[in-house]
Length: 338
Image (tube, rainbow, N blue to C red; front, side, top):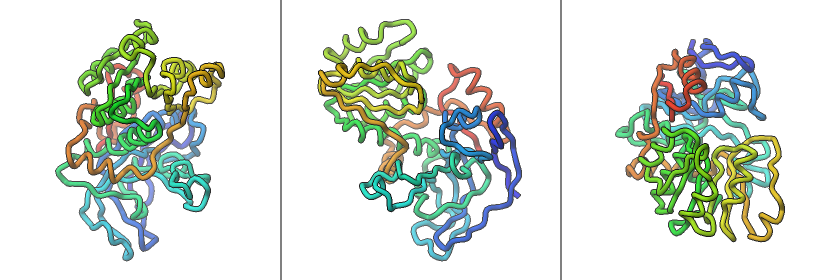
Protein backbone atom coordinates (compact mmCIF):
# COMPACT_ATOMS: atom_id res chain seq x y z
CA UNK A 1 0.00 0.00 0.00
CA UNK A 2 1.02 3.60 -0.56
CA UNK A 3 -0.13 6.76 1.16
CA UNK A 4 -1.78 9.59 -0.75
CA UNK A 5 -3.20 13.07 -0.10
CA UNK A 6 -6.86 12.66 -1.03
CA UNK A 7 -9.77 15.09 -1.31
CA UNK A 8 -12.73 12.68 -1.20
CA UNK A 9 -15.20 15.56 -1.45
CA UNK A 10 -15.08 19.35 -1.08
CA UNK A 11 -14.03 20.38 2.41
CA UNK A 12 -12.28 17.11 3.30
CA UNK A 13 -8.56 16.39 3.12
CA UNK A 14 -7.25 13.01 4.28
CA UNK A 15 -4.19 10.80 4.15
CA UNK A 16 -5.48 7.67 2.49
CA UNK A 17 -3.99 4.30 1.63
CA UNK A 18 -4.27 2.88 -1.86
CA UNK A 19 -2.77 0.02 -3.81
CA UNK A 20 0.73 0.40 -5.19
CA UNK A 21 0.41 1.64 -8.80
CA UNK A 22 1.30 -0.98 -11.41
CA UNK A 23 2.90 -0.50 -14.81
CA UNK A 24 0.34 -1.79 -17.32
CA UNK A 25 1.66 -0.38 -20.60
CA UNK A 26 5.11 -0.94 -22.11
CA UNK A 27 5.69 2.82 -22.37
CA UNK A 28 4.93 3.63 -18.71
CA UNK A 29 7.30 4.34 -15.82
CA UNK A 30 6.89 4.00 -12.06
CA UNK A 31 8.04 7.12 -10.21
CA UNK A 32 8.82 7.34 -6.49
CA UNK A 33 7.58 10.85 -5.66
CA UNK A 34 10.12 12.96 -3.79
CA UNK A 35 8.54 16.41 -3.54
CA UNK A 36 5.46 18.34 -4.60
CA UNK A 37 4.32 21.95 -4.61
CA UNK A 38 0.95 23.09 -3.29
CA UNK A 39 -0.78 25.27 -5.87
CA UNK A 40 -3.83 27.49 -5.64
CA UNK A 41 -5.58 24.86 -7.76
CA UNK A 42 -5.15 22.34 -4.93
CA UNK A 43 -6.78 24.77 -2.51
CA UNK A 44 -9.67 25.39 -4.91
CA UNK A 45 -10.25 21.64 -5.25
CA UNK A 46 -10.25 21.30 -1.46
CA UNK A 47 -12.82 24.10 -1.14
CA UNK A 48 -14.95 22.88 -4.01
CA UNK A 49 -14.45 26.07 -6.02
CA UNK A 50 -12.61 24.52 -8.97
CA UNK A 51 -14.84 24.66 -12.07
CA UNK A 52 -13.19 21.56 -13.60
CA UNK A 53 -12.13 19.13 -10.82
CA UNK A 54 -13.80 15.79 -10.16
CA UNK A 55 -13.98 13.83 -6.89
CA UNK A 56 -12.66 11.85 -5.13
CA UNK A 57 -9.23 13.12 -6.16
CA UNK A 58 -5.61 12.61 -5.19
CA UNK A 59 -4.40 16.16 -5.69
CA UNK A 60 -1.05 17.53 -6.82
CA UNK A 61 0.14 18.49 -10.29
CA UNK A 62 3.52 19.99 -9.38
CA UNK A 63 5.81 17.09 -8.47
CA UNK A 64 9.15 15.43 -9.09
CA UNK A 65 10.60 12.03 -8.29
CA UNK A 66 12.88 9.15 -9.17
CA UNK A 67 12.20 6.50 -11.80
CA UNK A 68 12.21 3.11 -10.04
CA UNK A 69 10.81 0.85 -12.79
CA UNK A 70 9.95 1.09 -16.47
CA UNK A 71 8.06 -0.78 -19.13
CA UNK A 72 9.87 -2.71 -21.83
CA UNK A 73 9.14 -0.06 -24.43
CA UNK A 74 10.68 2.83 -22.47
CA UNK A 75 13.88 4.14 -24.06
CA UNK A 76 14.30 7.76 -22.96
CA UNK A 77 14.69 7.31 -19.19
CA UNK A 78 16.27 4.71 -16.91
CA UNK A 79 15.87 3.54 -13.34
CA UNK A 80 17.45 6.09 -11.01
CA UNK A 81 16.77 9.10 -13.22
CA UNK A 82 15.44 12.21 -11.51
CA UNK A 83 12.39 13.44 -13.41
CA UNK A 84 9.78 16.17 -13.41
CA UNK A 85 6.31 15.04 -14.45
CA UNK A 86 4.22 16.90 -16.99
CA UNK A 87 0.66 16.58 -15.64
CA UNK A 88 -1.17 17.14 -18.96
CA UNK A 89 -2.90 14.40 -20.99
CA UNK A 90 -4.26 15.25 -24.43
CA UNK A 91 -5.83 13.44 -27.39
CA UNK A 92 -3.52 14.65 -30.17
CA UNK A 93 -6.42 14.69 -32.66
CA UNK A 94 -8.61 17.74 -31.98
CA UNK A 95 -8.14 21.22 -33.44
CA UNK A 96 -6.06 22.67 -30.55
CA UNK A 97 -3.76 19.64 -30.61
CA UNK A 98 -3.39 19.92 -34.39
CA UNK A 99 -2.04 23.48 -34.09
CA UNK A 100 0.40 22.72 -31.26
CA UNK A 101 -1.77 23.77 -28.32
CA UNK A 102 -2.53 20.54 -26.44
CA UNK A 103 -2.84 22.52 -23.20
CA UNK A 104 -6.38 23.38 -24.32
CA UNK A 105 -7.17 20.01 -25.89
CA UNK A 106 -10.90 19.34 -26.28
CA UNK A 107 -10.36 16.17 -24.21
CA UNK A 108 -7.83 17.64 -21.78
CA UNK A 109 -7.14 15.85 -18.50
CA UNK A 110 -4.77 17.13 -15.84
CA UNK A 111 -3.24 15.06 -13.06
CA UNK A 112 -4.50 16.16 -9.68
CA UNK A 113 -7.64 17.65 -11.28
CA UNK A 114 -9.33 15.20 -13.66
CA UNK A 115 -7.26 12.13 -12.74
CA UNK A 116 -5.23 11.28 -9.64
CA UNK A 117 -2.16 13.44 -9.15
CA UNK A 118 1.27 13.31 -7.65
CA UNK A 119 0.67 13.78 -3.94
CA UNK A 120 1.23 10.06 -3.32
CA UNK A 121 4.31 8.02 -2.64
CA UNK A 122 4.38 6.32 -6.05
CA UNK A 123 2.75 7.13 -9.37
CA UNK A 124 2.70 5.55 -12.84
CA UNK A 125 2.85 7.87 -15.86
CA UNK A 126 3.62 7.52 -19.57
CA UNK A 127 7.24 8.02 -20.58
CA UNK A 128 6.24 11.01 -22.69
CA UNK A 129 5.16 12.81 -19.50
CA UNK A 130 8.54 12.67 -17.73
CA UNK A 131 11.61 14.84 -18.29
CA UNK A 132 14.93 13.91 -16.68
CA UNK A 133 17.02 16.60 -15.02
CA UNK A 134 20.48 16.82 -13.46
CA UNK A 135 20.94 15.29 -10.02
CA UNK A 136 22.76 18.49 -9.07
CA UNK A 137 19.35 20.16 -8.79
CA UNK A 138 17.66 19.62 -5.42
CA UNK A 139 14.19 18.11 -5.24
CA UNK A 140 12.90 21.33 -3.66
CA UNK A 141 14.19 23.47 -6.53
CA UNK A 142 13.03 21.02 -9.18
CA UNK A 143 9.42 21.25 -7.98
CA UNK A 144 9.39 24.82 -9.33
CA UNK A 145 9.90 23.56 -12.89
CA UNK A 146 6.18 23.11 -13.47
CA UNK A 147 5.27 26.63 -12.27
CA UNK A 148 8.02 28.07 -14.46
CA UNK A 149 6.50 26.38 -17.51
CA UNK A 150 3.47 28.54 -16.78
CA UNK A 151 5.72 31.60 -16.88
CA UNK A 152 7.15 30.63 -20.28
CA UNK A 153 3.65 30.04 -21.62
CA UNK A 154 2.60 33.52 -20.48
CA UNK A 155 5.65 35.04 -22.17
CA UNK A 156 4.78 33.27 -25.41
CA UNK A 157 1.10 34.20 -25.28
CA UNK A 158 2.03 37.83 -24.64
CA UNK A 159 4.76 37.77 -27.30
CA UNK A 160 7.06 39.39 -24.74
CA UNK A 161 10.51 40.59 -25.79
CA UNK A 162 13.41 42.13 -23.90
CA UNK A 163 12.41 45.57 -25.23
CA UNK A 164 8.96 45.39 -23.62
CA UNK A 165 7.68 47.04 -20.49
CA UNK A 166 5.57 44.61 -18.46
CA UNK A 167 3.31 45.05 -15.46
CA UNK A 168 2.21 42.03 -13.43
CA UNK A 169 -0.88 42.18 -11.23
CA UNK A 170 -0.39 39.72 -8.36
CA UNK A 171 2.87 38.68 -6.68
CA UNK A 172 1.85 35.19 -5.62
CA UNK A 173 4.04 32.23 -6.61
CA UNK A 174 2.99 32.27 -10.28
CA UNK A 175 3.32 36.04 -10.55
CA UNK A 176 6.82 35.79 -9.08
CA UNK A 177 7.78 32.96 -11.44
CA UNK A 178 6.66 35.14 -14.34
CA UNK A 179 8.67 38.06 -12.96
CA UNK A 180 11.82 35.95 -12.57
CA UNK A 181 11.60 34.63 -16.11
CA UNK A 182 10.88 38.03 -17.67
CA UNK A 183 13.82 39.57 -15.84
CA UNK A 184 15.97 36.76 -17.27
CA UNK A 185 14.67 37.79 -20.72
CA UNK A 186 15.66 41.39 -19.98
CA UNK A 187 12.23 43.06 -19.91
CA UNK A 188 11.42 45.96 -17.60
CA UNK A 189 8.92 44.72 -15.01
CA UNK A 190 6.71 46.22 -12.36
CA UNK A 191 4.44 44.19 -10.10
CA UNK A 192 1.66 44.83 -7.59
CA UNK A 193 0.15 43.09 -4.58
CA UNK A 194 -1.54 43.89 -1.28
CA UNK A 195 0.90 41.83 0.83
CA UNK A 196 4.18 43.68 1.63
CA UNK A 197 6.27 40.52 2.05
CA UNK A 198 5.35 39.42 -1.46
CA UNK A 199 6.56 42.75 -2.76
CA UNK A 200 9.83 42.29 -0.88
CA UNK A 201 10.29 38.94 -2.63
CA UNK A 202 9.58 40.65 -5.92
CA UNK A 203 12.34 43.19 -5.24
CA UNK A 204 14.74 40.35 -4.47
CA UNK A 205 13.87 38.79 -7.81
CA UNK A 206 14.75 41.99 -9.64
CA UNK A 207 11.47 43.88 -10.04
CA UNK A 208 12.12 47.38 -11.42
CA UNK A 209 9.36 48.74 -9.21
CA UNK A 210 6.61 47.42 -6.93
CA UNK A 211 3.19 48.84 -6.07
CA UNK A 212 1.23 48.18 -2.88
CA UNK A 213 -2.17 48.26 -4.55
CA UNK A 214 -3.97 48.54 -1.22
CA UNK A 215 -2.23 51.80 -0.35
CA UNK A 216 -1.06 53.35 -3.62
CA UNK A 217 -2.87 54.46 -6.76
CA UNK A 218 -2.13 51.65 -9.19
CA UNK A 219 -2.74 53.55 -12.44
CA UNK A 220 -0.73 56.56 -11.33
CA UNK A 221 2.26 54.43 -10.32
CA UNK A 222 2.25 52.39 -13.52
CA UNK A 223 2.01 55.50 -15.70
CA UNK A 224 4.78 57.15 -13.69
CA UNK A 225 7.17 54.33 -14.58
CA UNK A 226 5.72 53.43 -17.98
CA UNK A 227 4.36 56.63 -19.61
CA UNK A 228 1.49 55.69 -21.89
CA UNK A 229 0.96 52.36 -20.12
CA UNK A 230 2.72 49.00 -20.12
CA UNK A 231 3.29 47.20 -23.40
CA UNK A 232 2.12 44.02 -21.69
CA UNK A 233 -0.09 43.65 -18.61
CA UNK A 234 -0.36 40.23 -16.98
CA UNK A 235 -3.31 39.52 -14.70
CA UNK A 236 -1.94 36.88 -12.36
CA UNK A 237 -4.65 37.51 -9.74
CA UNK A 238 -7.60 36.42 -11.82
CA UNK A 239 -10.33 38.56 -10.29
CA UNK A 240 -12.98 40.45 -12.26
CA UNK A 241 -11.65 43.77 -10.99
CA UNK A 242 -7.99 42.96 -11.79
CA UNK A 243 -8.91 41.98 -15.35
CA UNK A 244 -10.59 45.36 -15.78
CA UNK A 245 -7.51 47.06 -14.29
CA UNK A 246 -5.24 45.19 -16.68
CA UNK A 247 -7.11 46.54 -19.69
CA UNK A 248 -6.83 50.10 -18.40
CA UNK A 249 -3.09 49.82 -17.65
CA UNK A 250 -2.11 48.60 -21.13
CA UNK A 251 -0.56 50.96 -23.65
CA UNK A 252 -1.86 51.58 -27.15
CA UNK A 253 -1.24 48.45 -29.25
CA UNK A 254 -0.58 46.69 -25.94
CA UNK A 255 -1.26 43.12 -24.89
CA UNK A 256 -3.15 41.76 -21.89
CA UNK A 257 -2.53 38.19 -20.71
CA UNK A 258 -5.14 36.66 -18.39
CA UNK A 259 -4.53 33.62 -16.17
CA UNK A 260 -7.64 33.62 -14.00
CA UNK A 261 -10.51 31.14 -13.81
CA UNK A 262 -13.08 33.43 -12.21
CA UNK A 263 -16.53 32.97 -13.73
CA UNK A 264 -17.95 36.39 -12.80
CA UNK A 265 -17.98 38.96 -15.62
CA UNK A 266 -15.73 42.03 -15.68
CA UNK A 267 -17.10 45.50 -16.61
CA UNK A 268 -14.87 46.39 -19.58
CA UNK A 269 -16.11 48.93 -22.16
CA UNK A 270 -15.46 47.93 -25.77
CA UNK A 271 -13.93 51.34 -26.46
CA UNK A 272 -11.11 50.59 -24.03
CA UNK A 273 -10.06 47.72 -26.29
CA UNK A 274 -10.90 49.03 -29.75
CA UNK A 275 -9.53 52.59 -29.57
CA UNK A 276 -6.13 51.31 -28.42
CA UNK A 277 -6.36 48.11 -30.51
CA UNK A 278 -5.43 45.89 -27.59
CA UNK A 279 -4.69 42.19 -27.87
CA UNK A 280 -6.26 40.18 -25.04
CA UNK A 281 -5.30 36.52 -24.64
CA UNK A 282 -5.81 33.77 -22.12
CA UNK A 283 -2.95 31.59 -20.93
CA UNK A 284 -3.64 28.13 -19.52
CA UNK A 285 -1.10 25.56 -18.32
CA UNK A 286 1.70 25.21 -20.90
CA UNK A 287 2.50 23.71 -24.28
CA UNK A 288 5.86 22.00 -24.90
CA UNK A 289 7.74 24.14 -22.35
CA UNK A 290 9.31 21.48 -20.09
CA UNK A 291 12.51 20.89 -22.13
CA UNK A 292 13.28 24.61 -22.15
CA UNK A 293 12.59 24.99 -18.43
CA UNK A 294 14.76 21.98 -17.54
CA UNK A 295 17.61 23.53 -19.55
CA UNK A 296 17.18 26.89 -17.77
CA UNK A 297 17.30 25.17 -14.38
CA UNK A 298 20.37 23.14 -15.30
CA UNK A 299 22.10 26.30 -16.54
CA UNK A 300 21.13 28.10 -13.30
CA UNK A 301 19.46 30.91 -15.25
CA UNK A 302 16.54 31.27 -12.81
CA UNK A 303 16.27 31.60 -9.02
CA UNK A 304 13.76 28.94 -7.89
CA UNK A 305 15.16 28.70 -4.36
CA UNK A 306 14.04 32.26 -3.60
CA UNK A 307 10.41 31.22 -4.08
CA UNK A 308 10.37 28.38 -1.53
CA UNK A 309 9.15 29.59 1.86
CA UNK A 310 8.21 26.33 3.64
CA UNK A 311 8.78 22.58 3.31
CA UNK A 312 6.54 20.10 5.17
CA UNK A 313 6.59 16.33 5.30
CA UNK A 314 3.55 15.20 3.33
CA UNK A 315 2.13 13.66 6.53
CA UNK A 316 1.77 17.26 7.74
CA UNK A 317 -0.29 18.35 4.76
CA UNK A 318 -3.08 19.69 7.00
CA UNK A 319 -0.60 22.08 8.64
CA UNK A 320 0.66 23.16 5.23
CA UNK A 321 -2.87 23.91 3.99
CA UNK A 322 -3.72 25.78 7.20
CA UNK A 323 -0.60 27.93 6.85
CA UNK A 324 -1.47 28.85 3.27
CA UNK A 325 -5.05 29.69 4.13
CA UNK A 326 -4.61 31.58 7.37
CA UNK A 327 -1.17 33.19 6.99
CA UNK A 328 -0.75 34.02 3.28
CA UNK A 329 1.56 36.89 4.15
CA UNK A 330 4.06 34.38 5.56
CA UNK A 331 4.11 32.04 2.56
CA UNK A 332 5.31 31.88 -0.98
CA UNK A 333 5.82 28.38 -2.40
CA UNK A 334 4.92 25.69 0.13
CA UNK A 335 6.29 22.24 -0.64
CA UNK A 336 5.55 18.71 0.53
CA UNK A 337 8.45 16.31 0.98
CA UNK A 338 7.82 12.60 0.35
